[in-house]
Length: 305
Image (cartoon, rainbow, N blue to C red; front, side, top):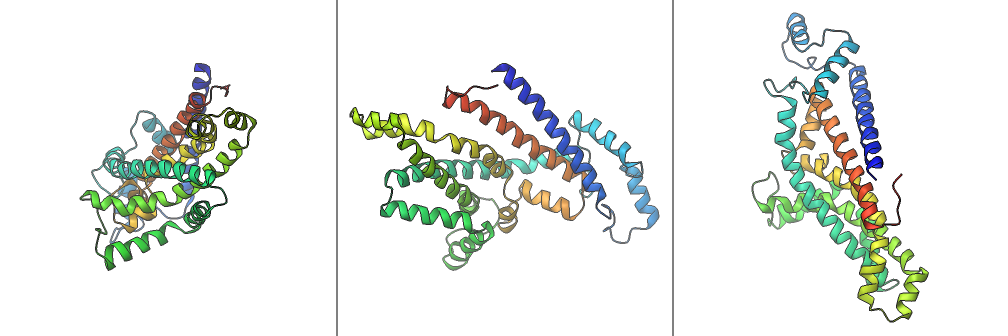
């Protein structure tokens, strides 16, 4: 197992390196530059800014300089937010996105698994049909539509919840619902399908024939095997929700990392784009490695090679 973990770590480092390399060169292939939108900046002043940040050097030399700093945890200074480093921006914005993401991921996993199990155990009945319709709507309806409906009814019409910012626990309700709506629906569908497949296995029929209680059959025998597809999806889903949905953060004016990433793209803040991309890729890869290890804990029959 330790050999497997060691190989996965090496593969993860290689993947992060490839992501960073592609992002750097593709970003610099886009016409224009970070100082093209500066108002009333003369060519001489623009050249001075490019020299200050090393952007007057050949592209490959810029790449080597940046990667050398990134290996030591230095992602440079923001090109637009003068005086702020990329690391300080990430670690000041990420906790906001992480809080919403953790709550959303927890909500999605708990309710998705529970409702998926209920739909499977009540197959063909009203509850199964109701949950299936809800899951289909959750997958089909875009997040910005959910945000709009929540803002209209709970924010504008009924005035029950605040519509922007993060100042109290009430501010988390609508963003969490909007962010977890799709993952909850998706987990419900895959959990129902997986549970139905497991419940049709021979060992499940044997357990029922022996008179084992339905609750024990469901949680001890069926759930442990049926939840593996959910674990597979949970890895990237958790990484996605931890960083936060760009659309949700923008609509609810949440000062998180998602909004910062969008602003950096619009402003061509190259160092912030690179830093947030590497951070997101690292987070995604680490969580996927953890998920692979959790496989072994859930189902000892799985061998890690």
